[in-house]
Structures are given as C-alpha cells and as structure tokens.
Image (cartoon, rainbow, N blue to C red; front, side):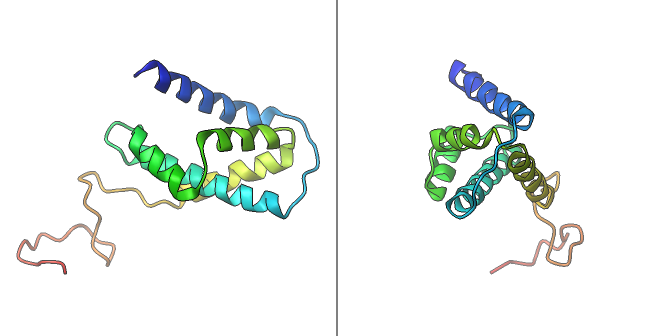
Length: 131
C-alpha cells in the first residue's frame, strides 16, 4: 500500500468513526437533500466497487470514474461529511441509509459468475450461448 493509499484509508476510517460522535445541530432540507443523495450514491458505488475487486480495494482509475460519474471530487465528499458532522440525527440517518443500501447489494458468487435469472446456480449447459 502506498503512503497516499494509507492516508486516504485512514482519512475515510476517521470520518466514518468520528461523524456519529459529533454534536446535534439542526439542518435544513432542499439543496442538502440533493447533496445527501449524491453523497450516498457515490459512497455506495465506491464501497461496492472496492468489495467486488479481487484485492478488496478500489483502484485509482475506478475511483476517478465513479467520482466523475457522480460529478463530485474526494474533497466534495470530505467537505460534505465535515459540514454535516455536527448534526447527530442527520448523520445517523445518513449512515443508516448507506448501510441499508449496501445490505441490498447482491453478493457475487464465489466464482464471479452471476447465477441465472431464475436465481439458481449457474447452468452447466455449455452449449447455450447468451445473446
């Protein structure tokens, strides 16, 4: 692991651990809801990409693609956490939503091949070709 990756991992771990311990300040809705949904969508996509990688870590190129797709930067994500950290209820609900979203992501089979659409094990029919 490079020093940059170690720093990045420590920063994310610190944010995850520190945010729920922060104070309680009211926060408005509207634009914040859009930022909230963007944060959740981006965080979930980043986490799923890491979980589905062979090493359990997201590559720099995958991270950059996900951030670009959502129109945010790492700084935007850190700033969002910093700005919302003082609102315990908001933060608790935010991480609960992330946990629910991550729990709903179906796991990949051990061999990396998704099961057929009927939900059973992968077909042993080697003559079938998918369109």
